Amino acid sequence: MRSASARPLVSVIIPTHDRAELLMEAIDSVQAQSYAPIELIVVDDGSTDGTAQRLRAARDVRLFRIDHTGRPGAVRNAGAAIAAGDYLAFLDSDDLWIPGKLAVQMALLLRAGARTPIIHCREHWVRDGRTVSQAGQRHRRAGRIFAESVRKCVIGPSTVLLHRAVLEEVGGFREDLEIAEDYELWLRVTARFPVAYCDRPMVIKRAGHGDQLSERYGHVERFRIDALAPLVAADRWAEPQRTIARRELARKCLIHAAGARKRGRHAEAERYEALAAESSPGASPPPARNASISAANSGSAAAYSRIDRR
Image 1 (cartoon, rainbow, N blue to C red):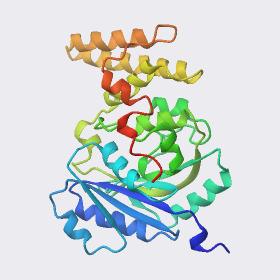
Image 2 (cartoon, one colour; image 1 turned 60 degrees about the vertical axis):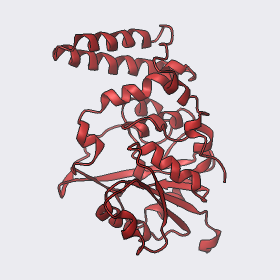
Image 3 (cartoon, one colour; image 1 turned 90 degrees about the vertical axis):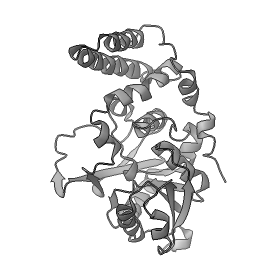
């Protein structure tokens, strides 16, 4: 039998802000894992609710505090930058892992081989104490899933285990996005790598509490447009990803434009209709409307430069 010391070190990164009670439950779910060795890093995004004081009593937790950003990608990147493990796993501070999650995923990932350096799993969704059915979620989850990933976010951050070389190659999370930073990263990842999948609910996704950004904004498709448009404008993808991404960006823009026009926001509708026309397959690549965002998506920008071998 392999000893624990012969297994790869997994660095678990929990970003948090003012969720001390939920955070302690998330930590407990990590420390209940059967897999070892684990490095547990909590990145505190400027909490003011006594999070640091609560963590003083926690065992085997590495606390890294940063000034408040309100940007999940920046917080996760800060943790990845100081992580010692060859493998990284992320857990949002309001989610929980089922015991055995890391052990099952690591076994499957090692079995998949080096060409598949990332695995995710099914989630069990809970809202206000009640299970939310995922029966209607029908999409491909394993292999080459770029086409599925560009349509919606099919990989939950709390479900992922990946080799750190993935982030070293494609860059980390975008640090300027408040929402859809995970969607944007998985586009860059799935454009390059196949993905493994564990078809078991190994993560409890807890929804419904008011501080969640998705709860605050409700409809998040506009944020996905903000994430996707600079990638399309950079025009770095080969076929078929290039056409898939441009077609989906045009579709999203037209849907948003129709909603804006219905609500009397005609100037906004015209902007998104113009972007849809520019993004359609066969048109010239749409111009980068925000130079800093376009640069951030090059895969080698300063926003990602901290994700490298320590």
